[in-house]
Length: 147
Image 1 (spheres, one colour):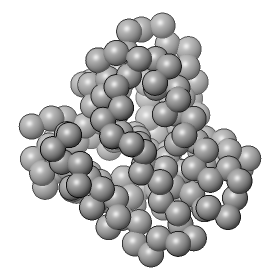
Image 2: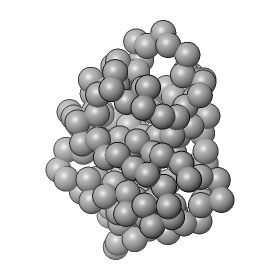
Image 3: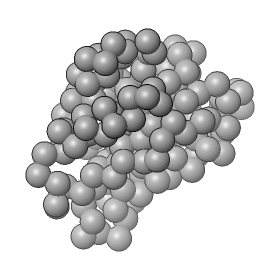
Image 4: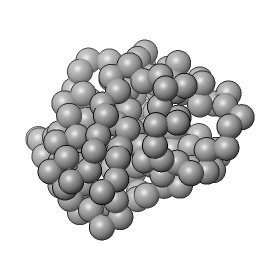
């Protein structure tokens, strides 16, 4: 099976729970995982080619503090990243006009770097979704043939 780097962007901790649920589901499907609560681009870029990014949006569409340096290093990278396959889970509140903007922006960034999207972004609306961890696990299972 494959190996996944789970990259977390979280301000208040809710996204960490979603990422941990994804880690549990990927492991149950036979994949190896490494959870990064303080992601370091230099460390992660050469680990393997599969990334799962779980991020919330903070403020006016900003990345959470713990992932900002990772994103900046990714933006500034001149390395060939075309071997990286990725999936994204965005966590937000549909009542804000910046709903899941960090997830949408990192998707555009990864695409601009030549990374390959495994499947469409999963957006979780914390104002509506009662059990985001379960929804994330179901999404992983629904896409297991693409992993």
